[in-house]
Amino acid sequence: MHQILIIGSGPAGFSAAIYAARAGLKPILFASSVEPGGELMNTTEVENFPGFPDGIQGPDLMAKMQEQAEKFGTEVKYEDVSEVELLGDVKKVMVTSGQTYEAKSVIFATGSAYKKLGLPAEERLSGHGISWCATCDGFFFKEKTIAVVGGGDSAMEEATFLTRFASKVYVIHRRDTLRASKIMQQRAFDNPKIEFIFDSEVADIAGSDSVTGLTLRNLKTGETSELEVQGIFVAIGTDPRTRLVHNQLELTAEGTIAVQDQSSKTSAKGVFAAGDVIDSVYRQAIVAAGAGAKAALDAEHFLASLED
Ligand code: NAP
Image (cartoon, rainbow, N blue to C red; front, side, top):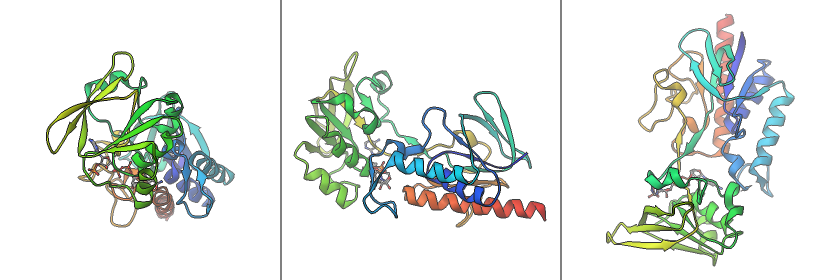
């Protein structure tokens, strides 16, 4: 039986792995088979992670974290976890390839998933002009007119990045003030290719094979208008990924995994959680990394108490 299994390969997962591996716990970390590395794999320049005064590309930062975790003995499995059993003394993690792993403790660092607009056309045109990842798909929109939905840092970052390819980028936001940090707002305001459409929501997406336009609704006047675009990037935040633990761990009203006080302890003994899956407020790589360290330390103390 293993000492510790870590689910998730973002900053929380790898930070937990570094600490657990250095404590001699030989952690196994489950990274996705499709998209290991978490949210930072879809980011360009990370400017606010301490230690990198000139910035670092998101994927490079994740590669360094993985290298550091493996250096101390973390075993990374490129597998998707399909099911977990957390309530007994022996925790079980099942992966889609059919294997079951057993351990005395588990750290959940499954992060969060992109929110959708909830429009019928969204599924149909996903990958055909609708995207949630500018760094993945921006290249396909060379000299096109596109829209970014959202008013947070992600929307500003995506819009600014997309001006490298697109001839014009509309930012559609449901209010008249942005949620994004001042520096990100200013960068977008200063960009001549970006135009803001405030107080508006996307009411419909047009196109049979690929996106051809949007119907916008002004939320103050109720009026609708058409906007011709060939692409739409949705950047309206994320939801914590808790599907695996429903009915096993307590969740908060915000839908994150509930942890006790300042710790990473969940409602199940020997199960710890860290990163965006417990955080509906800060959702920063550095905060997730700190939370991952806490989870590994909590797990270490728990395992030591079992020995006693
Ligand atoms: P966010 O801060 O939650 O912003 C989501 C935006 O989408 C808000 O403007 C929100 O509008 C809007 N929105 C939410 N649901 C919507 C809906 N159904 N329809 C239309 N609009 C909707 O999410 P985020 O931008 O992904 O950022 C998440 C966290 O990551 C933040 O802490 C952010 O600072 C951080 N982040 C940092 C960086 C960076 O520093 N480089 C880059 C990206 C993200 P309202 O404003 O009206 O609520």
